[in-house]
View 1 (cartoon, rainbow, N blue to C red):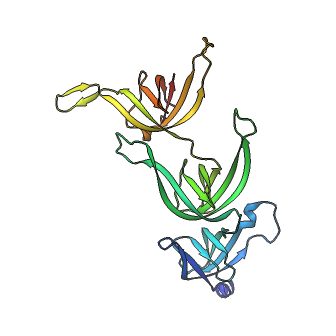
View 2 (view 1 turned 30 degrees about the horizontal axis):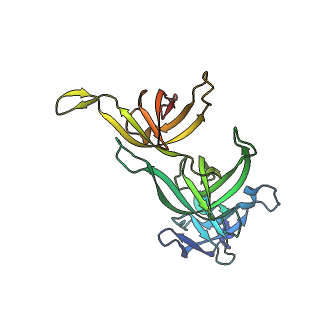
View 3 (view 1 turned 90 degrees about the vertical axis):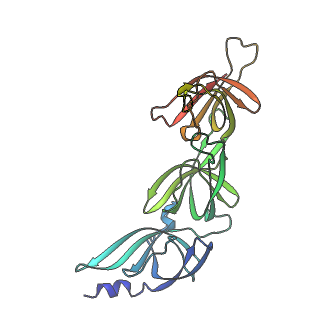
Length: 300
């Protein structure tokens, strides 16, 4: 039987591959054939975007995992590859593809990736500084819109997004597509692609200063433990801000702040102060969630 010849006799169409260095499509030696995975129309976005790529076993996938058909101009993200064999001989590859062609006012295209990360040393990370991680072809699918708690007629749109698997994004990263930014809420793997759950909302983290006496530290010169003053720049999330009128004597205004442990070089303590927007607030309590990856501060 000549299954290998039958299966690959049409899988010789040329493609262009995305070059991450030049940020452009360039000619490629890769050959294959794009085919539909389902010829029935669907009312869901994902089945409409998925394709199957047939290629010979001798073909090498482009490193960027992004190809473009020169005839149609369609851009595809390359996902999981499965091989087929006959009589012990590998002769065919089938690769899941996801359509990501850039169209005007569409939900896919070349997006810019951003991340805010500490720029200082581990013991004094400082405020988060934004850096551009690069560009990647992304396809988005509207998921739902959720009402913002304690807000009147305020909704946040939620989306799913797919991009090549070698882009390792994480929570609080941002994707900018056609001038709109989306915050990464969660990450997952899907068919060999990097899947994201993203929200259309800005970065709500704030820069503040924590002042006060730090935990005891060992003085290597005098060989003893000492308390040293702290004034550190920290980026945090305002969880809740409850203010009350001065006449409400039975209620005390308070502010809840959440700080990632890797974004602060020491353990905050009660009686330290938080300076936010020029206003100093005393830290009354500090707690940690069970996984101890965040500090939760209550200030008054």
